Image 1 (tube, one colour):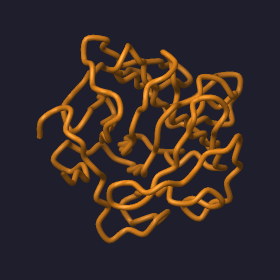
Image 2 (tube, one colour):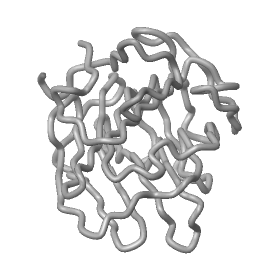
Image 3 (cartoon, one colour):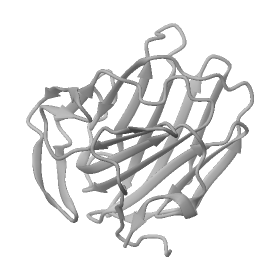
Amino acid sequence: MRAGMAVLLALVALPAGAQAKEGRTVWKFDRLDRIGGLQTQVAGNPKVEPAPGGKAAVFDGVDDAIYLPRHPLAGARQFTVEAVFRPDGGAFEQRWLHLASNDPANQTRLLFEIRVVDSSWYLDSFIKGRGYSQVLIDPEKLHPIGRWYHVAQTFDGTTYRSYVDGVLEGEARVDGFTPQGPGNTSVGVRYNGVNFFHGAVRMTRFTDRALTPSRFRLLP
């Protein structure tokens, strides 16, 4: 699949928020009060609007955010995070998915950010915990704003990787990884309320093992 193609996440036989036997959690952002069976805390005035294949939560990049009382990958020794989102420009640094463990001394977290340059953006993926910290970012890999994308990050117990539309963006070895603990998630903003996101989020999928791109749920 070519990089830059607008794609959607096809989640077969899994309702929103379902937890399958293999350790998979799906969140659809088609409402604001509850997502994946979880009661949300909403900041600002995000909206739900039609999107290809369903609906999406739209954030204004100023004060819109959604908070969920769960870290969906707590305890996972491997993982895959997939998301379908649309960046719409705005500030240079934007954090739009932030999984935070209840471990303030170590600031354990897993996240997606973007950097916006003129009418393009590039991906920033990051994991941090006790004994490890790794960022994957490449300013040379630019993508046009205003389109839908599938993005993913995986960790197989040794190597951390990031993808846009199923194409590898970056990878690095991570030593000393330990599973992250229970916590919470923010969508559309960094968990401490800065670096707001301007764009839309359609859905996310969290799996407690590393998937290869051929197993990402991509639908042209």
